Structures are given as structure tokens and as C-alpha cells.
Length: 415
Figure 1 (cartoon, rainbow, N blue to C red):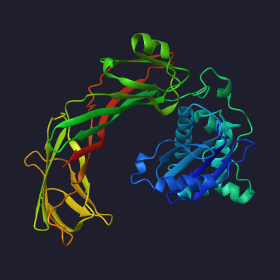
Figure 2: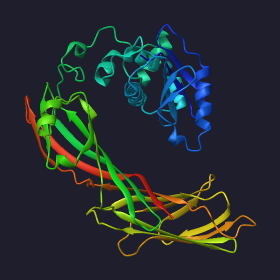
Figure 3: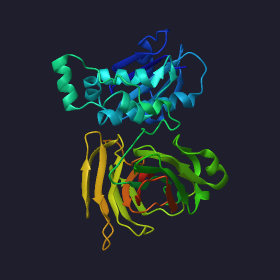
Figure 4: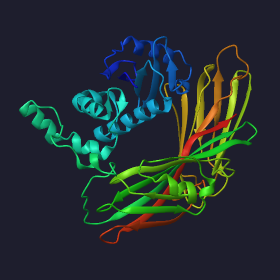
């Protein structure tokens, strides 16, 4: 049972406080959490569940906004984390993004959503379709009416029909002029390559997204050609678990619009699309840097939006870096960003130059880690392949479509 929810800005300011039970949680818990957070050298390493002297704290960070939930009782930790993820997703969908100004401008809607999503500390209504029927998303017309009438609430007077339906994620009596459904495979590749150029770890985290605009209550069946490669699968509540458990078939009645049908992981990937070869040599207070980028395994599609970044060590006083392709920028926080774009086929992009060390240092003792970004449209590098998508209970035939993309997640090359 959750007892309180806080929303913190990127500076630690409490933007929103929602007490959920009769037990009041003092705001001082946020100050304690923030002290623990800034004491960590890497903010990404903060644990999602922290035990304070008085409470258990669940936390996630989305777009610079920290979502905190507190409790004093034993409860499944994944329930608290999943609920905060649902809150963040729904607020982002309602408000068109998450930032401090947007939340402060829509305080009333945020509080109304939290009132419906959780009751006395227990999650209640978290389906976006039902919430949209209960609380209208903000728009210019509603804001003008609230100024004129003085009523800032967007709450509907009638209870949505889907609340009593066996498929609460789907609005009742849906009708579309054109019936269509699109399936998207969106994958992120996490990779670690050591200083010898050896692949240490490579795995892919993927999402099966479905964009459905179908009339009535359709019944869909999605099959894969090679489902055995999937690990750690997570499903939307609309998926029937028994067909997947017995035959690895996704059988479901979809929500209307775009939603995440399934998350998955594919381990032990051997083929990576690009290579990054850094070389550093230092002497007499300077360090020579050379970084070469090229295609390692051609995925058959263009590799775009290639970016190589690394943090200049604190002992570097100045840097002079140039590239034969793309642009090199050194930001105020000493981050060097090399934007390559699309890798050309006639030459390998190369960045080179010198780093000047602080006075008294002869050699560079701290070697930087290179972060690589890229995007490949039309390819799922995990090798996952769709076999067939069947549609039933439709009044008219529907158009079906499929696409895939892979981008870099935590793609690290050590020097």
C-alpha cells in the first residue's frame, strides 16, 4: 500500500504532493532522498527502491522529473515501480511531454488523474482509454472555458462503459471509417567492447508496438517465426497468457490506438553493425587521439544518426579535435560530441587531434569511455521475425502493416 506520491524537479524542488492514506508523509523525506541522490557519483546508479530511516521509497526518473512513492508497510517492490511507470506514461501522454512548466500549468488534471488511478494507496484505474473517458485531456478550448467559467475540472459526469467491460482497456462501441493495424518492432542494442576490441557483452531490449484502429471488438493473433530467441518477456494486460505459454502465440483484443504489446530481451548477440577503434598515446604533457568508425556487419539498410561521445578527463586543460567527416563539438561540461550522420561507403570517418594535459602531468592516466549512438530503419538486429497476423471479428477487411528499427542503447567502447 502506497502512502504518498511526490514529483520532484531536476533541482530537487517538490512540485507536487499527493497524500494517499490517513497517514501523512512529511516532505522532509524528499530532502533526505535528494541528499542521497546527489551524493552518488552517477545518478543512473541510484537504486529504484531505497530504505530510509522511516519509509521505503520507490523512485523512477522520466525526462528530468523524479517520481517518488513512499510506504511504511511491506509490499511487492515491482508493484510500486510499475505504478510509478504507469503514472509517468499517462501524464506524458495527457500533457504531451513531461517538464516542470507543463506539470505546474496542469496541476488540476494531474491531481484528478491520481485520484482515479489510486484509491487509499492501492492502484485502481490505470488504463488510458478509461481515464480519457473520465478526464478529458487539456486543450486550448478547455483552458479558455476554465478561465471564463472558473471551473478548471475536466472530469466527466458519467462513468465510462469500459469500467464494467471484460476488456477494460478498450473503449466500447468503437467505429472507424478505415480499419488498419500496424506492428512496429523497436529495439535497442546494449553493447560493451573492451580496449582490445573484443565484444564483451551484447544484448537487445525490444518492444512490440501496435497501432490499432479497428472497429468493434476484434480478436488478433500474432505469431513469430523464431520465438525461441526471446527472453524476459512482459505483456500488456490484453494478452492471453495461456496461448503464449503453450504455443508461443500472442492472442489479444487490442486497445484502440498506439500501445506496447510486449517487451522482450534477446541475449548473446554476436553481430554488431559498426566498429569504433580509439587509439590514445600520451607523452610530454599531450595526448594524441585517433578514433575511426566504420561498418562491421552490414545490416542491409543505411546506418544513420551515428554519434560518438566521450567525456574529457578532468586533467585535460584544452583539446583540438577535427574529423574528415561530420562535425566535432566540445560542450561546456567537457563532453566531446562527434556527429557523423550516415556512414559513407567510400571512406571511413576518422577523428583525430591532441589533448593538452594540465601542467605537471606527463601522461593521461584516465582513459575515456566512448558512447556510440546510431539508428537503423527497417531492420530488427535481434533477428526476430514476424510470421503472421490474423484478424477476426471485424465488420470489414483491415489493412495490415509492419516495420522495424534498431537504435543504440548503452553502446560503450572502452579505450
